[in-house]
Length: 234
Picture 1 (cartoon, rainbow, N blue to C red):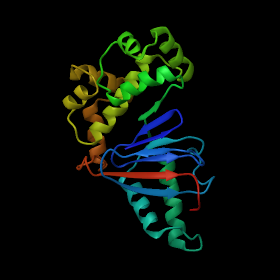
Picture 2 (picture 1 turned 90 degrees about the vertical axis):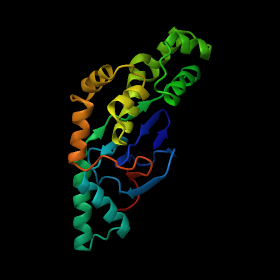
Picture 3 (picture 1 turned 120 degrees about the horizontal axis):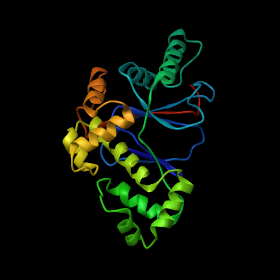
Picture 4 (picture 1 turned 45 degrees about the vertical axis):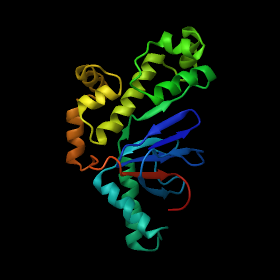
């Protein structure tokens, strides 16, 4: 599942959540069947998450808290159970770990065209010069646009796109070899090293940790999406 807002795009793997700051205009794309739960929280309830959007790691406890809250509807603070449910939910949201499945897009029209080509196919291995030639723009122009709008080089941005897609595929149950191939790595070892430099652990160890928490999806085509948005009343 993909959510985009202005220059930003988030990929939400199965059983993860997206925190959306209040009054953030956004679009949702669902390439397949998705079951979604949405919470609306009053401004000021969840310290630490409020000014930004982020993909969050949803533990089994947080997942059940979200499902229970949605089944009740608007929580009543005069009800001891519902008040306790809200407090526990907020505490778990504050503890949730953010995931690096976020991509920023350039504003410059030609740079955006190049970026969208990579997003459509993260495995694309064409050199930057070829991509720029196809878009009718110079390499220098694209590099300047990426550094101005995103603050990084094109190649660093492409690695982030590949990592973002890799996380989504790993959580969906794909093998490390398949994931490496689908995000543009000819050798699994190169992908594993890139993943380790970013996460501080290997894909296998990372997935094992998720399995311990009951996070890995067993049905990649029937994803569960949990969203918390800072707006409304709860």
